[in-house]
Image (cartoon, rainbow, N blue to C red; front, side, top):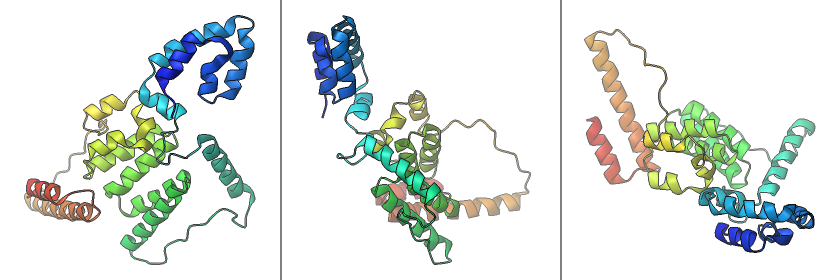
Length: 263
């Protein structure tokens, strides 16, 4: 694990030969600094680096130099990019399907199909194939658009592939449909890229929800129709809360509190 203060110390007190870049295992940059030392430029660049590393956000430093943008400690970012490049090549040039193919669900029940897509997405996620995981979870969301757990998984996968806008959207949807483990949200390694975005603080201040830009349309209904819709909506929300409890996202106490608010 690299330390930003050690990096800044090496850059300031040992500016020659690019020692701090070798410490970060950036051999290419280290060699460049080594050569620039002989013309007097390398020392100046090292002093600039010392200031930048000293004031760099720790989370951003970890994301860049300690590979903490993902959950596996042994994950290599360059290897991940090369892996996805090969996967893209297979999709375009190999009609026989050299890459691993996830079986499609055989059942006709929408709930069973959604669960199959969710499991397939988890399998792909575990193998670092985040783009395929996104594809499977999007299919699950089409069948269960209020599934908070799947929205949260999508937010993590989009963050890992550095697609901030989509990650913000699905994280907002997860909170909207019952996700409230904000401590996990603020410490999840997979969301590190999202947390360093400029709009994250405003997003968090708004209760981890996106600000609505369009007003909800007004529907002119008579009292009976309104009562029927209200009753139906409450039953659906109770059913969703029960599903979240069964999935372990809500505790029994949180389920009881949310149920009390609805009733």
